[in-house]
Length: 264
Image (cartoon, rainbow, N blue to C red; front, side, top):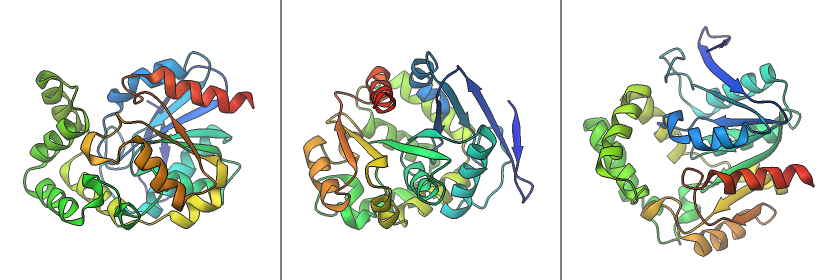
């Protein structure tokens, strides 16, 4: 994998494939990129697709800091290297990072496409029926990561992916734990759960596209229509797009949204 050296000496490893308009898959707090290989393959048919290992994970330098501003700076640096003008596919905590960069550097990011994610604080989701809306649940999950990291990953994977078989859950836990160590995951999760990028999200307007369905996030996220209603109140100019399933089960659906954006 090629590398990009940051001012503080951290090296970010990245790779790309395909030709065409640029799409960047932004890394999220503990996720292993292999889980999203289907969407990368689908988009690489007619796009230049780029992904990178966030600092502290994968083949990038295994050190922080892991705050939102530093991570947003890394994202901007990767996009500068790639030439900008990207659609960023932003998952979980990568959504607020991408939104921040898109507002400050519109030449780098044309559109942020966020499957089941939004740049809002947990307080904004209090009215929703979802585990992520409960401060008690979030605090307990953070503490579990600190004491039993693999157990916490297993709990999250089984709750957000009820369709996964036990063998796949075991494989994913091992991959994620090796790819992203506990100290990095905890720091990134804490930065995410205490972040509020709502103003940046509003400033982005319809350059923020949020994908939602009843199958995204299991009990952790609000169900489809409830999520659309909740986010519509806080991000009235964002485009909320329903899709039948998530980007792992149906990568063609998310890719279709991105292709539709480029045809306008």
